[in-house]
Image (cartoon, rainbow, N blue to C red):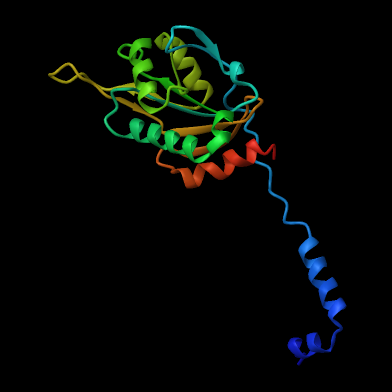
Length: 199
């Protein structure tokens, strides 16, 4: 049986140094590119919190994190927005290369003014989008999101049952990854950084 430590002791110092240098110069394992999901997503036009028409193409050159929800949501939607806030902060200066988009599924209550207040609470740079119910349904269908207004209760309140997905969109407007709505920064940031690095 070979004794590695005995072999190393017998080698001249320059040889050992060369072996170590070769090991250090060996290229790191290539990072696998994120898949492109061509059959989902695509461009759209909705109205932002300033009542200005916005398209997904307006954010070309930026990495986008997109989610659907509604501002009256008691738990999941605000938790998702806090996650987006945390990701933006953890990216540091690269946070300026990330755009967070929130599409309301409740245009009846989520007026531009309400969306503006909601976005400002988490980050003034986040964009809230709305439109007519038909316009929102069309975009939701493009992205494979389903939603349904639940019955109104005695107090006149209602919830919106909806698919819980966070979409990672690259600088060319293509979906590159899907995350469960409960995903945390540790699960999402590596893929965001990979797109920011152009990989």
